[in-house]
Structures are given as structure tokens and as C-alpha cells.
Image (cartoon, one colour):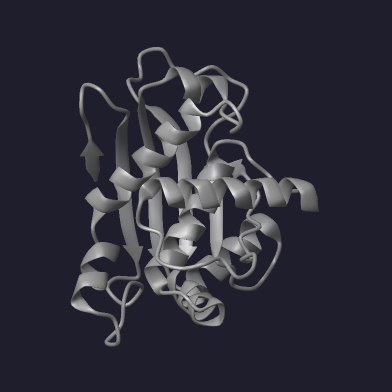
Length: 203
């Protein structure tokens, strides 16, 4: 687990997991720099913190009241393989096939516990093999695709959904803004990823 903390910024507690490890992340064709970045919990936590602050600070972006008011958050990010995400997809979405990203949101209508310093957002699960295939199809690198999928899952944790084309387009625009804000955009979106995970009660 890693914590990004500064008196002037949002605090993120991130539980970064690899299942199975180490084959879920990287392969022999990846550079050492890319493998290091994929396995870096501080890098992921810092990026999520930037995204969260951008959403909190822009009125045009949907932000639930508990998220708007809180200053400390926790969430899980799991980078996994196709078999694991297919099993979860079948259990929670009744779709017996791999997908690219699933999100399990912890937020609901109940107020957060007052004695808990961190607001629990939920969990994001990403299939690295699927992300790798989509990165090749869309003409950008694996890191860009993973960041794109994580941003999509992250918005689901905050209550975003896309039941129609208009809401999906709005969600995609928000993701593009978040990746621009992170300052590490490495490609151009050339299509909409599968990324249709429904926000569900956390496991």
C-alpha cells in the first residue's frame, strides 16, 4: 500500500495488487522503464490524486458530495490476467468472457463513517493482456492504455455511468481531460475501449 500525502493536497491510500504475479504485468518485450512504471504504486497513487483533484475542482465534472467534501481516500487497483477478470465478469455481470476493466464502487447513499479518516471508493480491476491487445489495435503503448482503463474505472467509482451514447461521450471527454491533466499522455485515442463495467457494490 502506498500513501500520497501533503498538507496542501488530497491524500490517496492505494492498495496496488498483481494477480497473478509477476506475469500479469509486463513481458519480455517491455522496456525496463515501462515495467518499473507499471509496478510503481507511488506513480499510480500520484496520478489518481491528480485526477481526483481535477474532478473536485471542475464544476463541469460529476463529483459526489462525499468525495467533494473529503480530503483522504482509499481504493484498490488490481492488475490481473484474462482468466481472473473473466471469472469476475461472469460472477458480477453474467458475461462469461474477459473484459478490459471492472469497477466495484463502495460509495452509496449512506453517509461515510465519521470516525474513518479515509473515504473508501472501491476497487478497479484491469486485465493487462486485454489492455496490451487494445494498445496494439489503437496504436499506442501499454502504459497509455492502462491509464485510460484505470481512469474509466475510476470514474465509475465516483458514480459515472454510460447507459447511452451521450453519457458515454461525456465520460470519454472527461477521461481525455484527466489524462491531459496528468501530463503524461503518450498516444491518441482512436476508439472507445470496451470499458463498460457497471458500478457494483464492492467485493
